[in-house]
Length: 164
Length: 232
Image 1 (tube, one colour):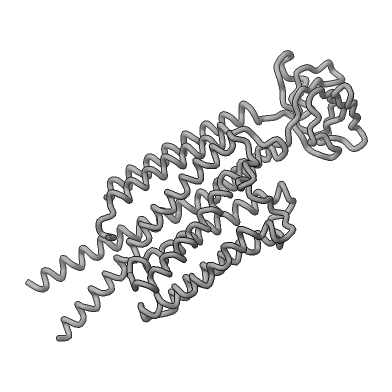
Image 2: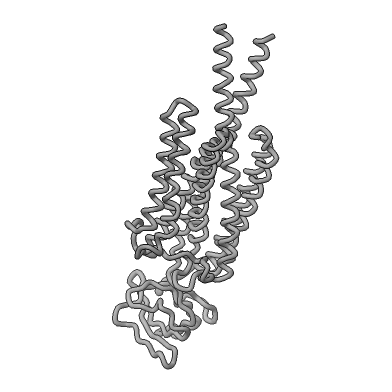
């Protein structure tokens, strides 16, 4: 019984480690972002995700052409973005977004996708905190069951010896 | 019954690990982000299963309490106690995950919303049930009073379920209803696997807890018997 519990926990730990690694890899691949100040350092021809807050007064939409222009600002640095794509509700002044930029000519960045800021810290907290709560409960209950079993077996053994 | 559950307990433990691992992979890696909420909507895949399992835990406690009052079955009493004792952990997890999801979406950790308050009341009923059991010494009286409390507290379950229809609430209505599915199929797969994993985990923890309660009583009975024998 103790061996099977140990194997179970070993399997759970291995699965958790594997999923954490895959999640981290996905985060780096799909959700990592750069600030507007770093956009020039990026290799031309590849997509780069730029995070920033849409500056008040900078958002100009051209609904007929499906385009929008706005200024993204983060930590003092700003970049003008020309976005062409579905008019997401995300494009609002003072909202922090991530724009996927495919080209930058030194003054304006061309973006083809916008998303909300990842907020991954909240997800990590929610999964981590509740996961720990469940793990602690499972460990505590299993430990108590094993302790009671040992106590009862020991008690019965002593009772037998006493009876003899 | 409780002494012959080792193989089932092992099987449930491994099944829970497998389903939850697959569910976590689907939820954190495979499922697409929500169109409007983005990545943060991934918290739904733990928050909703926690909430459903909390309600399931109380439903089990209610049914076992009815069974206890009807048949005076000790096993039913152990299961009701174990179910509440595990269920309260799921209630705490639901509220914690909901609060963390609420901050970036509602801009608050907590609000006095009908769904949130009725769910918190479920947690208080469970806490009251466990306190009642801890304070009463007579085992028969303890089981009977606890069963009555569990049956009275059951009235909170339909209130939780219908609160989003009865009152204007911040909390969203059910994604799965007779009117259809208001969630993308890829997200639904991840949510279903997580829900299945949580249900198996709940059953596993309830069995482990109920066996612990049974062994505790057996040990206590053996000690009393030993003392009586020694005195004779």
